[in-house]
Length: 430
Image 1 (cartoon, one colour):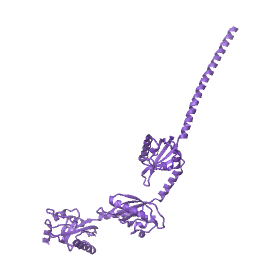
Image 2 (cartoon, rainbow, N blue to C red):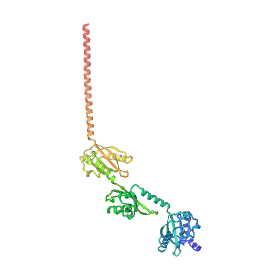
Image 3 (spheres, rainbow, N blue to C red):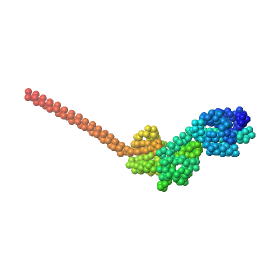
Image 4 (cartoon, one colour):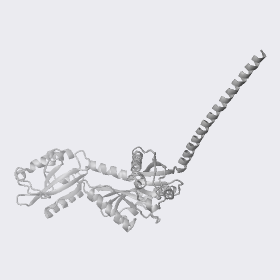
């Protein structure tokens, strides 16, 4: 055994590991093993531990002398020993790296979940003489997994986990409540059982994008419930990764859109039947929806208004004013009033006031604006009439003042004459 250990510590003893990486010259196996951050051990073909680094002792709580020369079967169950032996045989025969799950017992008796990465240990002639095993403590990962499973189970929204082929591996109770299927009727089923062929392709495209680009993807799905009802939903799909960061599936969150669709239909009905001209625009000012009152106001058909920018109907200055109002609506969530003078189909400039408020998606994000126009022509005509009446009234007041001045002057003269007559009469008597 001492001879074997001596051979293992010399340079170039380990020619390659399971990945084909070569250790040369001054790269010493002992140094690499001793300084590895993960627990690393070397075993012979019978599973006897020939070498182990300090991280193994820290993981298991045994001293080095309690680990070396021991069989792995001292630390793992008979079943896991057989699994390790099979993995070792596969590593030797096929030269591949093999991963297995082990649950070694620590010095305190604790069972420690760990993953084992086993690769071949070879002599200078390339013959497999044992294995290099790298353990990974899975306790924190298992806690994280249990926490994630708890989150999925207790999530208020329907949440499921699928593999890369769209097979459902996990689903919470909210999925069953949404679709009306029992858990056992959902698990291990393909999503294609619940959605149409077209939507299955859409989901697979979303899944492909999640895998390739690592992004979260939204899609629209209409799964069929147990009663045959088609349920409108939105799907938010994000990547499910293994401990090495490789995407192995997707986590999907469904949102029941029935109430939102009802609300949207109700809102569209309100817009359509509103007496005032109402339109919906995106954040760039493009008109997405407009009711008949808009057409009546401007004299344009619906198809001449929809998908058009507001700048087609208002001046550049007013376009800037609308953009500023839109910005204020987005940033502060407030309703904003502005003055607009759109041009009608006949070229008439129509004075209006605009009341703009935020249009939000189902997550509360501002995605545009709802604008209500008020035709100010009648109001401005009333204002003009009042101004005219005011002018006429002022002119009449001036006339009255002049008349009053003439009348008062005449009366004063009459009083003066009467006084003069009285004086003359008094003088003639005297």
